[in-house]
Length: 232
Image (cartoon, rainbow, N blue to C red; front, side, top):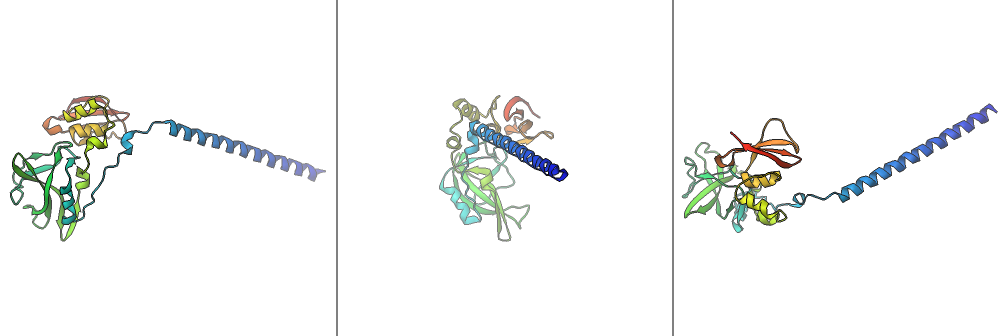
């Protein structure tokens, strides 16, 4: 009788355990389905669906592909260009390329950088105001190339890549102005590359923009501009 009672209790425990496991499994499945429904219902930021083309040049010859279409500057106010007449005049800076400035590269050449003759600069040559200029898109040393043009330039018109942006946003970008509500990509198109202030990261942070000699400090909350003030 004692053994029978023990068997009955054991079976009861097993049945109860199986039932509990099934209940927990059902709850988990409901949570998974709810999470999927929520994810599907949430609107996707169209900016996340933009994938600019890359050329991935690996030497001087492949870099000539930059001459086959106009390019637009990704990293505004961070690329120095120099007068060019057969060689770049590295001793005299001509200026900085503007954010999303449209450029037609005429050719890509190797040039000797006086401060480091053992390392050649890969220079993109373009014309402006009837004069030729050049800026570096990479280096060559010992036959090995490091080319950064994909990080520096768009080979597609940003206006087409981000044509889902409202007209007033594009007007602010063309006027090199930031305004509340813009996201970080839009501000980069307007003011150029920003640098982080302090330890802020993620969607809540402050970035400082040189902005072509008119520095600004921009605070972001939830990924949008929440405050703009003069920088130093």
